[in-house]
Length: 630
Image (cartoon, rainbow, N blue to C red; front, side, top):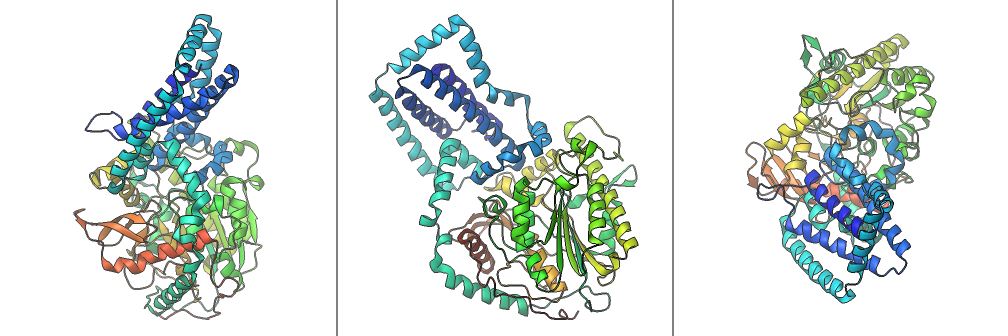
C-alpha cells in the first residue's frame, strides 16, 4: 500500500501546481525547483516508512499521511484561489470555524479538486481486490528491499540540488505564492512553524532593547501629527456635546457599486444618498484580506501583520483601542456580531478591545434563519436599533454585516434584479449586486428607525467596507493591468481594494468628497479628531482631515502613495524595496520621504509581537471640548 500511496501523492503534487502554480516558459509544466522539492519530501517519507518494521503500522502511516496531505493541500488550494496568497500558519487555529464558511468552500471548489480526497477510497479498493492487493504487496517488498544508503544518497543529492536552487532564487524576491511552491508546502509551513516558535531568538521586532527608540519615535510622531493643519467639514461649529458613534463594517462593499444602474434602477440608492449628504472618503482602500483584520486595524489603528491574524493569536492582550479610549470620556460601548461568538475568536477579541456590551449570532439566529450561516442584515439592524435605545448616551455602537459575503447568495434576501446564468463571471457580478441591494435596503430601514427614535440627529455614522469582493471579472482586469510587475498579483489586490467609506452626521458634517488615500488605520484617529480628543501615540494612523497626502500599506507587503505603487516590503528593514511610477509602472527608486512612514510599520509589528504597548494605563484622552476650527 505504501507504493500506491506514493503514486497518489505524486498526483497531489502535480495537481497543486496546475491549480495554483505559474506556467514556466508558456507551458503548464511545474518549475524544476518545485519538482526537486517534491522528490525531497517523497524520499523523506520513504525513509520514514522503511524504518518501520510492522507492515500494518507502515500501511496505516502511509494512508494517514496521504489523507492529511490531501486535506491540507485542498485547504491551501481554496485559500490561494480566493486570496491570491498562501495562508499564514496561524490559520490552522481557524479550523474549527470551517463549517461557518461552507457555502464559500463549495463555491470555490472545482470538480478536479476531488483528486485530493482519493487516498482513502483508493486504499479501500486496493484492499478489497485481491489481485491488486497482492501486486501492491510485492511492489512494497521490492522498494523496501533497496538498501538504505541508496535512498539516503539520492536524498542527499536531491537536497543539495534543492538547496542550491533556493539559494539562486532567493535574491529574486519571488511573490509568496511562488516561494511557497518552489520551497514545497511541507517545508514552507514547517519553516513557518519554526519561525513562530523561535521568533524571539531572531526577529528584531521581538528585541526589548528597541523599546526606548520606539517610544521616542512614537512621541515624535504624535507631536508631528498634532501640529498638522486640519480642515473639518463642519456645518456650523464642532459639536458642543459628544455625539453618539454608530459604526457599520460592511462585508465586501466595493466603491464601484456607487452609481451602478441596472435597467435604470440604482443598485445602492441609500448608499448614494449617504455619500451625497455626508463625507465620502473616495480614496479609502482596504489594507487587509479578512474581516477580522479590518476590525483590528480600525479599532487599534495598528497595521496588519503579514503573517499573522491577531484575532487568532493575540486575543488575550489589552489594546489601547478606540472603545477603551471612548469609555474614559464617558461613552458606553456596544458590539453586535452576526456570527457565532467563537468565529474568529470574536468574543475574546471584543473583550480585549474594550467593548462593554457584546452580542453574537447565538442570541440572534433562530428558526428558519439557521439556513444561513449568519444573521441577515435586516434582522441584524432590527436588533441593533432595539438595543441602542437602552444604551446610556453618548455611546459607541458597532456592528458587522454579512449579506454581501462570498458567494453572495444568502437565503432569504429579495433579488431586486433578475439572476443570470451565464457567462459565469457576469452571473457572479449579478449575485453580488443583488446582495448589495439587500444590504442597502436594510440600511435604509435602519436609518428610518434611528430617525424615528431621534438618535440620527445626535449621532455620527461611519460606514465602511472591510475588504473588496473578489469577483472574477475584477481579478482578471486588475491582474492584466499589473502583468509583468514583480508583485503584480499583490498590487492587483490592492488596486481593487477601493471600498466604500462614508461619514454621515446630519447635525454637524456638511457634504464633502475627500480623495486623500487612507485605510482602516486612519479611521479611529479621524473619529477622535472629530470629537476633539487626542489620538494616543500607539495609534499609528492619522486623521483624514489632516491636510497632506495619505498612503496605504497593505497586509500582503505592498502599498501605494498618490505617485507610486510600492512592493517588496521588508519587516526587518522597515522599508519597501521597490517603487513603480503610478502611471507607467516604471521601476524607480523608492522616494526618501517613505522612510518616515514605513518606520511606523516596524513600530506596529514590534508592539504587537512583543505584546507591549508603551504608556498603557497611563495614556489618557485629553478631555478637550473642541477640535481645531475649520
